[in-house]
Image (cartoon, rainbow, N blue to C red; front, top):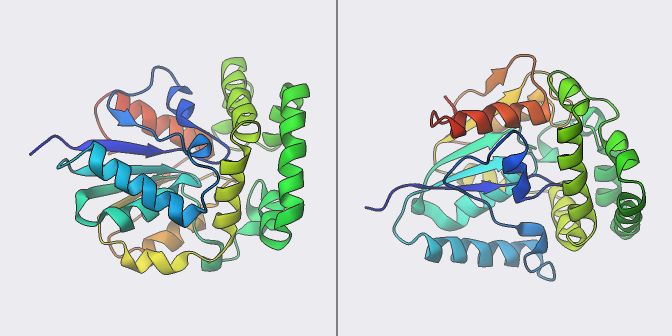
Length: 258
């Protein structure tokens, strides 16, 4: 049997370049570039196409799916479509369906998510304006996004190299990737909790105890809702991106996420 392949699903905003935020990207992680890939398709149809492509590209190999932040939903949707091909799912600082709890008031970016949920047309206009702001005032946009860093993200937000890398991700997500980004954010705010009981693969959840982007009770709710989930691993002192950094360094050292 071919060796297991690992597929990484980035956050939103985000992109495959997340794998290089904390040093050289870990070897052997494949990252679909979702925001630039067929943004004209509705998300369900796009996920069908993506799953078919992964199935064909890695024919016969077990697949480990890794989802960060809003990419957790994409990893779970892909697992639903790939079925027995999936050997395991790793969720890093995952965003859970909003229907599972009163999470939104405690999420960084809550105004954007509320806008996408309640007034999608206005949300589209705001994304366009954010793209213009990223092009004209990139440093200001970074400071706006990281206005309230917590835990291990405080040191990251003060690191010029990290700031430059995140700014590049923001410009790409809100510029050429804006349609794909908008597609996923809108879809995240709609009900999707119905897929969770249908995920049969084993799931491990890794969450920063100080995460103020995806609050820790999101991880707890996912443990309850996913049949194959183990207890969430709370990483003390870490927030959103610092949890991702811990995970990627573990992968780079060949240790997995244990």
